[in-house]
Length: 318
Image 1 (cartoon, rainbow, N blue to C red):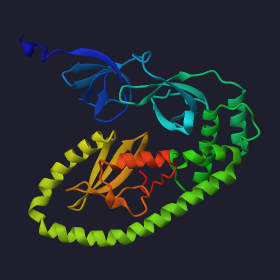
Image 2 (tube, one colour):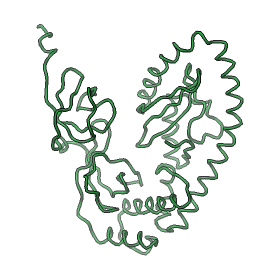
Image 3 (tube, helix red, strand yellow):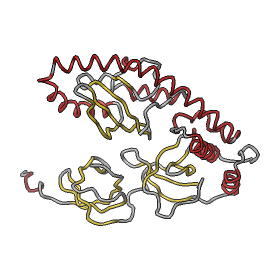
Image 4 (cartoon, rainbow, N blue to C red):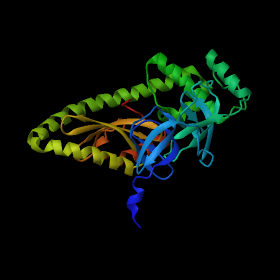
């Protein structure tokens, strides 16, 4: 059979585009020739290249895993107080704490499907949130709504205190925050800030010594460092993919280090690694000074364990 006649074949496929350089079909990842605005598009697919042709209505969601929960900002809060980003929300912003349905797309991304019917609990929770009161007095509230309420209280306290947080850093305490209200949220955020400050002081001392070592190494290997940098980006992407993470961006820091931004478990992380070995210099999370015992490939599993043990503290925010 002459396969050359299929090389120019163009197929039409409706897919959700979330941003970036690629789009995921059921069985493969396609390179997007000219990135459109995020949304549902009909793509012309030729080989492994997809070209957006026109906006389209969602297709192919019915057979995908259904995920239900409550909306907190642009995240769906589901069982276990897990707060995942949900993509392609409607232009008209749903009310806070709305019950929502989403489908898990082929690459693991949650795609908005629709709103569920509300009960009395959602309206009561919104009123308490507006009045700055805790949720303890309301009965028969779904766990996902309690968690979404707790995240919303933490969000308000975060703006007031100027202390950033990620859901994975507070997941273990979010139900307590929903019961305790603003005081519980502020206490958790202050504790988080204290842990970060201690980590930063320790890392600053280490950083000065490492910078001196890196500069000496750069001077010794000046003729070869450009070639290693070019190879480094490819190795970073492969290491992260092998660990179940997705590379989002890299930035060169001098001749011997890379700043790596990657997505994992619905969050964004920033780490600094050695360009030649991918050994971690600064994990971007608190590892009690053990950052250099971890490689970029093993870092996602360390992050997963920290999330599951409710001890994750993020020290570098996007």
